[in-house]
Length: 183
Image 1 (spheres, rainbow, N blue to C red):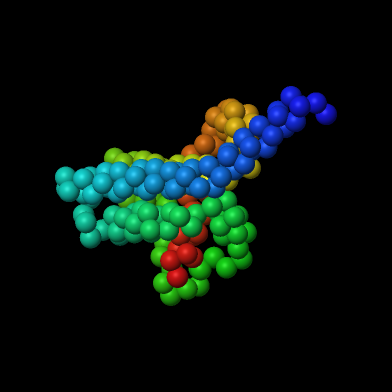
Image 2 (image 1 turned 135 degrees about the horizontal axis):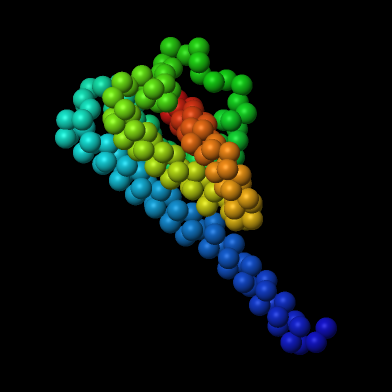
């Protein structure tokens, strides 16, 4: 090996070390803080929507969504691809628990006013997308997979009209993850 080749190898290893340290250090904190900020903004939208009198502060829907957002903010640092997978494949669904609440989707479906249901659903979708981005951006492998595979999957979902249904499934799994982490 010649000296220029050794220098290039040294530069490569140094770059890999720097990227690894950055990804597992400041990048993780940055992504968590950005996600929390988006969750605070979603909670603020929910509060302002209720403050305008569109929904009662004591309603089940408001309280469930607010609690979901608050728990997401509080447990944001614990959400990862591994926690998502473990909860997704978990056999215990907390359905027989005394503390089990109806899912947010069931509560939203029970709201008669379509405009209220749509607005609350938009807030939940925003929260779900924020948490999904957190899961993806915290895992180097997921980040690479998503960059490679997402254009193909997005096109397929859009062509089939499955985008909203998939977001609801992801939301339900994240909701269970947060509920299990809260105990």
